[in-house]
Image (cartoon, rainbow, N blue to C red; front, side, top):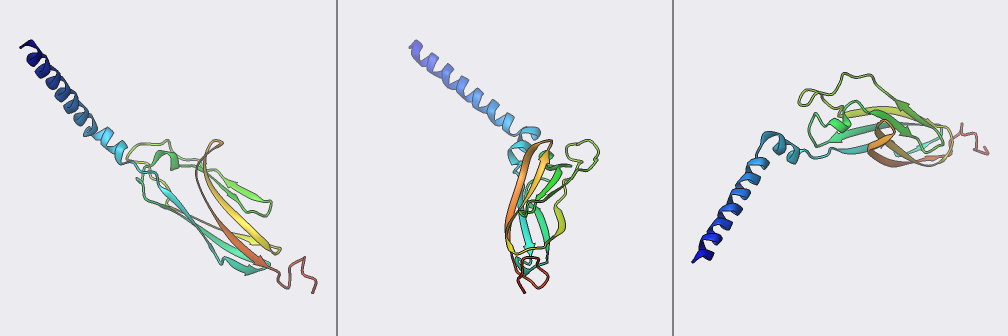
Length: 152
């Protein structure tokens, strides 16, 4: 009955391997990586419909994920306004430290649209030239009295 002893040896090997995998997954560093969900970006424009010149207030909220999510720590901020203009902001931050560095959870700004049109606004978080997160929304600007394209 040598095959029974080989079978027991195989089962024991598989059990040992399974216990090793469980121990690795429960290791604090690996457990943290498993729970590390990517934060989501939500962009809101107020008002979504306005008359030119329209001042639009924009707010981005970073939802979920850990407060020390490395990819979102100290990024460059880029706004593409959809009217052939854009703006970018880069900050000088301390080096990233796990469990100590905190990501920014809210970004706010305003933009003025001078002419009527439908505009798609895109917000991007960047690390160097690489986009690590983005969100977009649309606004509609109707012709107003001071709109250069208004015939009145």
